[in-house]
Image (cartoon, rainbow, N blue to C red; front, top):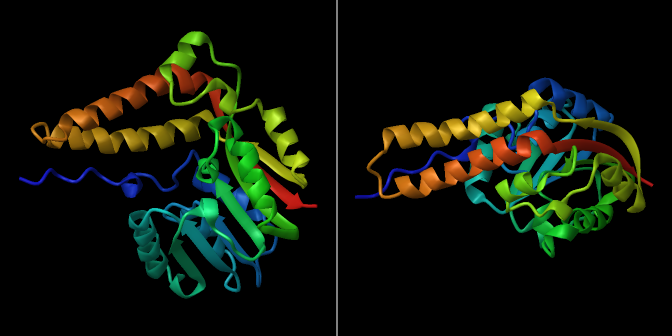
Length: 251
């Protein structure tokens, strides 16, 4: 018997990150007028943010790049349903080696890991690569985690997949962006409610799947995965980890 498919991440989530509708709209406004601009979203997932940006201006076009063909197809279906398919291209490719012409507006949120290397260097590697992909005077929306405060030893142990040195306090994140040739136009962070909504939506998919498939050969795997993430969230991330949105201009 084939094991039931685990619900995809986008089943219950609008964005693959801690972001509300209202906050997304504010971020889009920081990107400036989008008329005749090309918006490139690198590590776009199912491209929800990109589609919402394009919906604000009928003369804007977009390109989304992500390695996961499954989530891209979901994004393409959304684009067709919203009448945006003729203005957006969603491409399955490795962002870490992607080479494109510098764009007017670039988005990279929550996916610095795609440039590889030591996890401690992910943020710097991403900013260095993105600097070459934003035209002079162009804008970059950069979303990245930061430490609201240093985790205790117990909190760090609860989230072993995040080395404490991987992220910086918020001032250090801003300074790092400026050191890579950008100027800061706008700064905001995800609220506790946005974080909770994001995490709750992901947990809902796992928990409902487990309740409906208790005898599945994958049940133990999914239960361990859900339990590990819940433990990290409650005992580590919720009190320490923030997520910042930086709107930057290429100097």
